[in-house]
Length: 521
Ligand code: AHR
Image 1 (tube, rainbow, N blue to C red):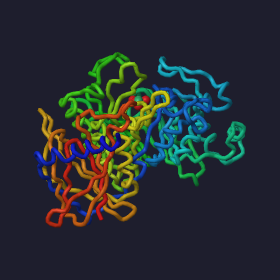
Image 2: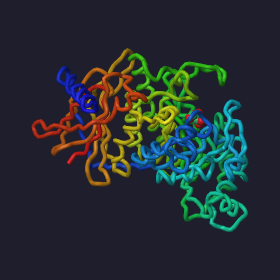
Image 3: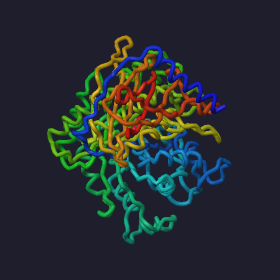
Image 4: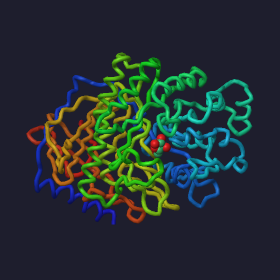
């Protein structure tokens, strides 16, 4: 069965290439290496009390028939370990700014049942100890967002003390009583979430003042090297301009010149809520599957807004911080569609279109490494642009997961500028670069290329000046919404891919709708 499926895929790769291949030239400038690609660029976000992201998706409990490690799904843990998740941001998201950390410690049976967004209940089964157990299983770093919106600096300071202090205090004794005498390592602490919206509807000046106050009281032992991440603006500009996000950033940069890291959120929503639609009122974001080419081109063009935003943000940050002390984290990003009918909040399918958005976005981050040191795709399991979807005891990995898997050689790599000759995929008013390339020297010394063909119809011969051989993997599919299902979990997965040598130079025959990552040697 497997053999037949990959045979069909192999034919699909070859046929369009023979039919109508265009040509694009790529040159890699190895004389201008950029700042290292921080491995935290491939970070993940998990939100408590939202849909089936934590419960079902990650946590099933020790007594579940679903194979688990101390309550965590073994299939999910194994899949995530395979992509070497560098960090997991938790507990929110908007949930972070209604969370009382004390609800999630102590004997589970005694933890309170709380209300989230007036809709969802949370029994706090997963709390601080469970979160750290989970990231230990993954070998990932901790990134905990503290409650600024409805909490207090004192509560946040106490939580950080509970997690990190190595002194003998009442809180560290409580931690020991709850089963963890030693402090955990908290690499990153987030000062609130979306303080412009669900985190308290504050303006940038007020956010700066409040955040400074919190930051002053939130401290971990110096040796831990904990980074404080300040909640910045929403990157999704309105009226076709990024003016709001840039002004907001400028205000925060001026008021907090010593910020270690500033975060933004930037989702790709094909059809955003029209201005004036009341919060909570239903609106249509667009379907995750079964969409037409208009939706495909629209989604890609919205995803591509990340690159100019990063360029503009960098310019603004450079004004007050030319030495680039303040790093940028894209704390939440990803595609956001209508959720699947009959499914929980924001559970959406994931197709080759999402793989394209993921690859284009990661390529953008890899071109802005002087500022972008972290990103956390939203969200890891069963929510928005997930790596993994679960249903009962079944689990599938998504096309986006495969991109994260294929991009692993870029972790810690040194990026090189890649110049691509002009070629466009056009649909209606949308003009989208047909080929996007990111290049970097991996930690193993090899040159890696990530090549994206956005065109859903046309193959492209990507011609380089490189010599030698190139092998790797390619992800593609016959339709714009090719995806995996619980009944057909391997419909889309990467297959072997190589460059060919023409006149001594490497050429990559990219089929339509395809992302390839190859090592050149
Ligand atoms: O990821 C879902 C929600 O999107 C998060 O709670 C919030 O931070 C953002 O608006």
